[in-house]
Length: 48
Image 1 (tube, rainbow, N blue to C red):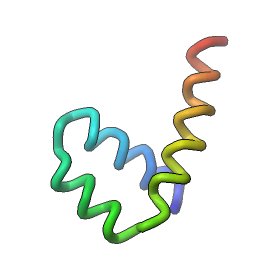
Image 2 (image 1 turned 90 degrees about the horizontal axis):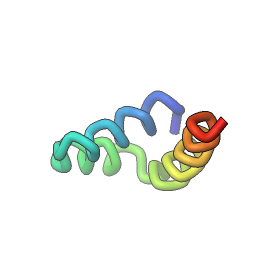
Image 3 (image 1 turned 120 degrees about the vertical axis):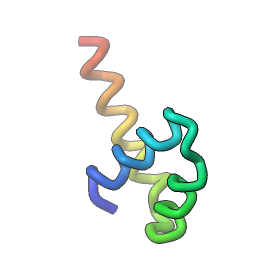
Image 4 (image 1 turned 90 degrees about the vertical axis):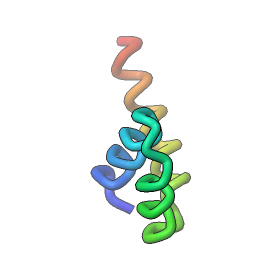
């Protein structure tokens, strides 16, 4: 899954659009791994 897809997935979940997020997840079943990696990188940017 691309980084853009994982960012869109996180955005949809954050804004309460779970139906759209689930549709994206069904289309790309490996979304959870990408989201976890992206979240870690983003959190480190915020810290520093």
